[in-house]
Image (cartoon, rainbow, N blue to C red; front, side, top):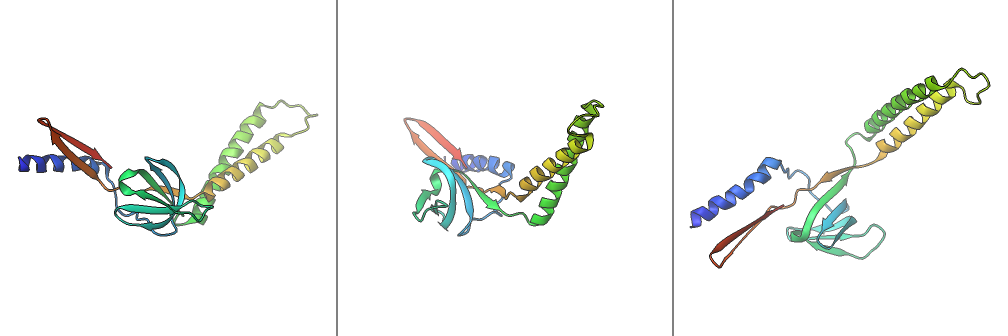
Length: 168
C-alpha cells in the first residue's frame, strides 16, 4: 500500500513539472505584489515572507495583513524591466508607427475639400502624436510576474475510499 501511495504522489507532481513552474522569482521585503487568496485580493507591499506566512501591508497604510501560504491562490510581483529605457523607446516607436498609419488611413478617406479646417497632414500628425503618447505610457508600466506557489498535495481516507487533492 505504501509504494502505491508513493507512486500516486509522484504522479501528482508531474503536472507541476509539465507546467514549468520556475522558482527563480522570490519575494523580498519591499516588493509590490498582487495577491489572490481565499479571503480576497489586492495589491500590497511585502513586509516578511516565510514558508508558512506572507505578511504584507496595503500601499497607503501602516497596518499589517498576514496570509497563510496555504490560502494563497495566486501571487504576482511587480518587477521593473531590465532595460526600462529600451522598453519605453520600443513602445513609443510602435505607437508612433501605428498612429501614423491610422492617421494616414483617416487622411486618405478625407475628400479634397480645400476649405477643411484640418488638413491631411494635420490628421497624420494628430494620429502620430496620439500613438506616441499611448505607446510611451504603456512603456512606463512595470511587468507583473507570477510567483510560483508551493505544491500542496493532501490525502485522506475513510469509509473504504482514498481521496487525493492536488493544488498549486
